[in-house]
Length: 471
Image 1 (tube, helix red, strand yellow):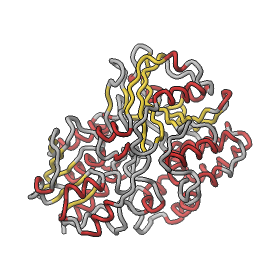
Image 2 (cartoon, rainbow, N blue to C red):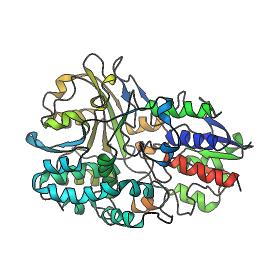
Image 3 (cartoon, rainbow, N blue to C red):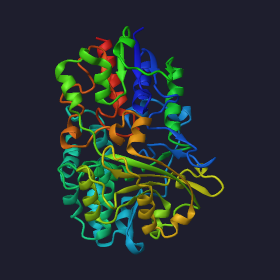
């Protein structure tokens, strides 16, 4: 039986391990931390009984993929819950806009911009299962659904500021700016619409679900399935050199590219080493976990029923903030993403106190404290929020990196979404998972299709490894 070692137990490392084990490989996962999960960890961060997600909270691209269809993680305890409103965007004076599961309901709330919204997202929603199949794999492939991909690509190539101006109202433009800002990219740059279109359409096709009980249930289900397939996991094992792994037929690295260089050393071909060292990381995140009495009192009422709320003002304000953090400057009013997971999963709250998981976009490696800035930003759109706060725990970009080395400089998406890296990540190659060392593969979110707890980078990398070991 062939053997494999997987370095790292994030969702992609676990997905790779499970895929290999199901393919007849003897798998051992090595995790440096005392617990598994990477970005899919949860815990009582603020108060007893109040369950927070440490990083990844909502998973619109995890519910229907090649990986999720292959492994019945529901039988291992993973269940999804969806909020009534998928995401919302409050504006000053109680105004705002919201995305519901239904395209028609969303369009109906957008007034004169409704028909334009329906034409764009309705057409993409009808084809999104085929579109997602295409972009959840390396871009260098022969597409099975070229027309659907071409339609998506025509819009995805546009700057988000350009696409947003197809709408005339401040509400509709801000709604798209908020979801496009998930890319951590200047909204005026080429292809900055891609992430917003993908996540925005996914909200209609799949919703923005949470894992019932916390995101840790995603990794727990994969661990359970892996053990059923004979796999093993060892925690508190720090791998610093390939010499520690020699002897396995397959090595999977769920690491950032620079960490792969450190582990592999001179074994990597020079061209791969150069590519990995030039891999670009994006801006950072500043995270805050709040325990809030009765939840956040948003002035825009649909935001109270939303799983995710985007706080950043109008299109121009969000575009300016994203441009500043890309240039290494901290904006006075950064873009803030607010996660209200207990709206979909009430068991995460305790005695009327709700977990609220928030992060602000900040420059990479920023060492300041954005806690009060975040509180003030939310308070502006939810008067009375500050008085409801029972407990607060914050983490700077540097602390995020210390907690998870893949998040270099606080880059929680493991790689900048530049046009080049959206198409070719972590390097230009027919097999982007191969490291150039026989049997060694990179399987982190630095590889296609990028960030998200969908496990598809691990699945794709493991299939490449299985093809190698079976030749």
